[in-house]
Length: 146
Picture 1 (cartoon, rainbow, N blue to C red):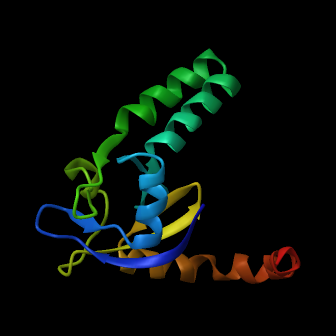
Picture 2: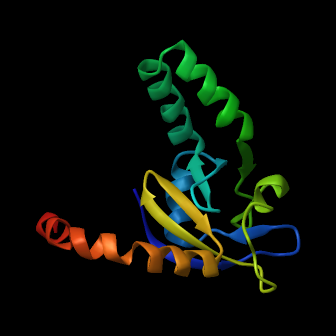
């Protein structure tokens, strides 16, 4: 399970060094990762094994029309990468362009159970500000789960 928030710097090729806790989990499932467009100018990152499980779940639960739409609008946009020996992961260029990166070329990785969201730091802060009211409204239920 992925958890935590990590600030990472992209190098000139668009690679980031995977933080140890995330890297260990990804490598336990193989070297490959899959990137998808995420919500609100973010990207989603799945281990190859988890992505295959997502594909199996969609095959089992979507009808033919839904499956075709999923393939056309989600799977066709996917990009893959591998963790190299130095622990770096390359964000595919066409997907990296979807992140509104600042000059410092930093990204925030947010662990979300079975996937990781990738945000520009500015967009991540704006998202948290926009959703703070919903968090406050649901805080009692969330705290009861802890």
